[in-house]
Length: 414
Image (tube, rainbow, N blue to C red; front, side, top):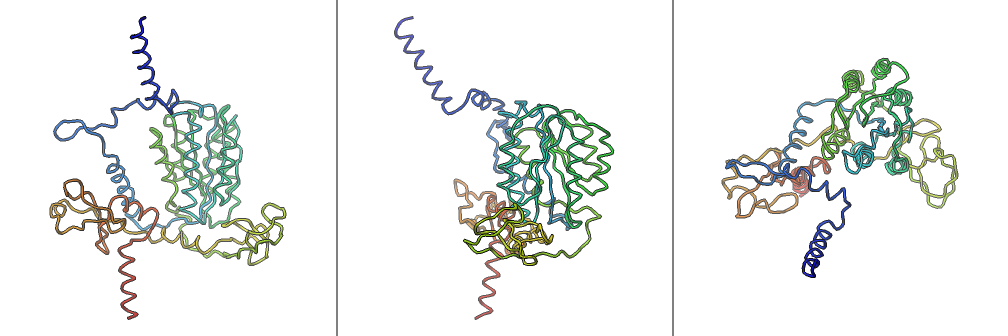
């Protein structure tokens, strides 16, 4: 091999290193897989990249219309156990780098979103491995505690027992107050279940206890999972890939419609504790140890608790803060879906606003052509697609309607 050939080979190796720099070997392989799925054919028969932003917005709009089509009673105080399959099936690498890692990441995002959507609710974690079910965390309202416990227990082994997981969750949920809505969400990787008894009897026990069970599968559809969801009123889906899994998991964050037996209004006693003074030493009733400063004092028995919302360990009073109630309010009176601006109006540029009322970004595409936009049916203000999603999923108030309300208040004062 002469010097020129050596130099040429060295340049090729340098280019390969630069193109794959920052990625592991499996990442470089995965990045190039199924790249044709990011293309679609237009009316003229040419291939062009898929407009993922418009596609995701269309899917979001369909979910929003379905959710607000009928006024149904929802359970705002939820007690949910997430059952995670950590059997050897979770070590499969069809999800990169493995099912276990992907599921753990999605559970972390789900826990944070759940408490953002349901500040009065509580979550517990259960893992399945070696044919047994282990309660990883009890019902609680601290997302950081659940995430820390989950990340410290990552590991796969043995078989999964769906019956043991349901029995454990059923026993734990039977202890909660009658006004709470009992739910189980199962993330299942295995294609079988290794059970010590009759799982059909366990499913009937869950149904009798009014526990709503939902399953998200990471492999093929299983009859027993489908039967469980049908009997208890839950939902069963099989994830196609990681983005689809994320979408399916986050669909369980908003409160679902209440079961018919629970759709009865009742009053619940709640306490609004005060923040304890800093520097004061007191015994925490939930951890049974002395702590300095912080925490909250129960208004009924004066016991100290670390976090809200929770239930007082001494007198059993439900302890919340006023912001928790305010953040749950939007589920009772959701904002109406915005209307799509018709193509006929988009042709008349002079009648349309040039900027989004929310973020003040331009609504015009290159060439001063109007882009996709929506309008509030009440105040008639126009918004971009990103603001549409942000208003309905995070803000829960229309800026246009609020500005009209404020202007009317100022005019009345004058």
